[in-house]
Image 1 (tube, rainbow, N blue to C red):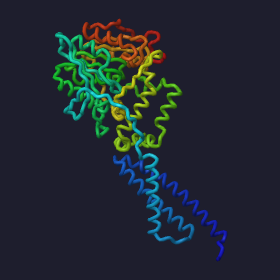
Image 2: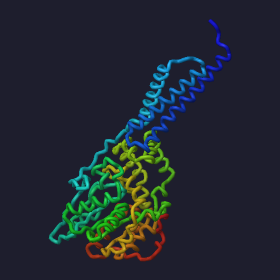
Image 3: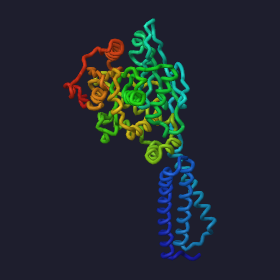
Length: 437
């Protein structure tokens, strides 16, 4: 048997190294095409097909390069078969790494009392506490939860007291969160959709006018509803509201809860997003949220969102107060992400709100992470507004100081005067800046 010459052996080794590198680059090219295709397609199978075709074509070329360098003739059909097998192996490996949905918690979901099927297409879970006694008031109170996407488990504090004062009280899970329906198209999660849902609810309950009470994002929703339907609002109560107009704070200076997180919280949050599947979903979301939604299911995304909320929840309270702020009701990841993004492009509601003459109560907790100008702007924008400061409370005023929260709200809605003095200064008193924790 003739021995191979050193030149022949060196050529084969070199060709093997070159083709190995080429195949590694081919696999990476397939992954890059998978993500790049999201700019054109919404379907994950289509992204996968584009990636597989890329790998087959590139690996076929690598095979031809190897054959030429090794000076070994290989039938084209054989090379194509090997390239196809390699493409399928890469696809199977990718699926093993990122394609399988993560484990879902078997967490019980609290049942809602009733549902509305709104003409907007939303199926909305709600709770209703009828007015007690004979002094029924003409306008119901509707609570708007925060988030977007963080629905509660029941009626908020002050509900029983407001019902006793003659108000019909409602609380509902906004579309995309809690027990309400999820939308099949994530681009439909907009600020306008939430406003239209609220107007549809007013029509369903046959109320000429309503009192809207908003917490955090719910305060933004209350303001935007009032700007769109000023003749349908009888009063507004906001606690720890978000920015009236987000584009005014392009640098994030409106106050972000994550600005106060501890190193331990940061490590925990990074762990929740460290899996290859979550990384893939995050990259797809940056390119095409619709494609990301088809890859990452609502249940899976909502469960990760819950874990993040559980980690950050202590920052929504005063330092010496700790309560379980994360409800059993599932939060809504996609409504949070898409509505939050939409807030950056909506029109300015403040010109319309400056002409609204209904009474408005603005509450701010001592340790609210939202910046002071954000809260103050509600007071300064609404002509008939009252601002009060809640001591020893964080962003979640109703959880930190439920009795004081209830007394303040009920006094304002029944007597026109809150249980605390008005605050009219431009700057916060000592200890009330959001940086003080």
